Length: 171
Image (tube, rainbow, N blue to C red; front, side):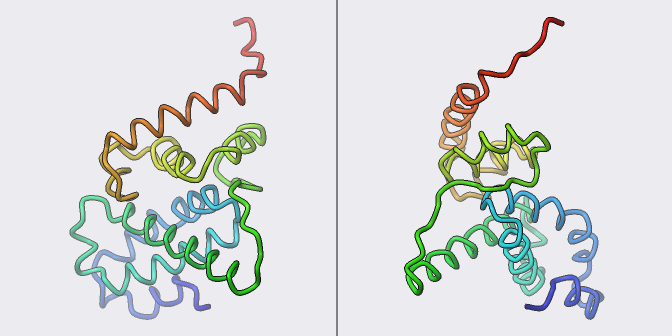
């Protein structure tokens, strides 16, 4: 697969503003997709695919309130579709948990995040790790803002349970 960076550098003048968008968002979105999907390589490939599609539709995407949200959603949809096709083709069972997250530095937090259902994990990644607003997250995931809030509430409660064993110290 051709890396998005190669496509961008080859024809950057054809899409004004895309190069700056790419350089500001690519690594963070690739890490977020890797965390969400639990697979670093798939997250990078999903980010590459989504950025290539973004580049092709930049005239439209550049006017969105949250172009990064569009890229995240396209990458997530692409990766989930790819996994479904692969599983059907090879009868490979799909694990709905993250084996290795890339954004949380603490392995115990990454492991707790990995135990969340994908729908809850995507909201946590968007709201907490990417620091998107409720509205930006709702737009990116194509769900209602109320759904974002309720999923985040459930996810954070579950994470609190999973991380309850941490000693917060006697400060």
